[in-house]
Image (cartoon, rainbow, N blue to C red):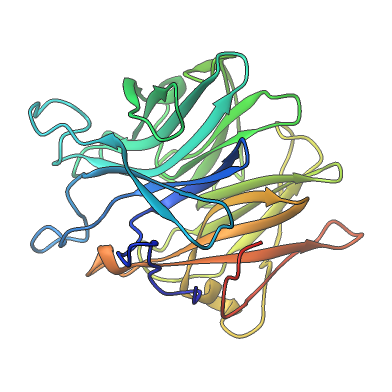
Length: 302
């Protein structure tokens, strides 16, 4: 699978799973993402909401399309799942206490003024997921976002807020379906988005993108010994040709396989979003808590 390009599923169709995540459950990998499999709305850089796709794989290379885990609702113009709305950056986590899969996503109006999140649940990884609610978490605007489950199984919503000027880290309830009121603001006035978070050897790491719309920019990583503590921006973690513009990609999600961390990138094509490509790249760390993301031309899985 050539990094930076659109990938194919086992049936030869384009994989439509943009802005998503990969999780593992009972030995199977599941890839969730935005289904953008139609032309852009005329004169715009958006696609009507189709839903959240789900793909399954045993090796992270051969992906089977499992269908829409969460589908648009064309019957209700007031629904935040109506095709005219915005559904971006879906993230799924499994709650061991409730035995349910919980899906969070950036939920918005077509003009991006609502700036909230949606939450849906399912008894199975492939869905169908049922929408529980949409909201602005802790009465704060929320745009690019991710979900992170800490080592103690406490989950957090990390989202761009204050018109993308800062990032909030908000603790979730035990069932992962809502925020519980505790949150901190970090990287204040740094204008970062597209957060991807991981934990390694006593340190939390966050890769983010600059706020330049669809234009490429240099990724930066931040670190902190405490998730809800003070985060410090360090440097661009990318290395090799194309590192200055993040290989013409944007951070999406970090996942771990066999004790190795990998980061997912989206390679957006704003004029033809359905053709946007993907990359999965390895992350390494040194003894000074610096992270490095190295470009590989091809993703070969595990």
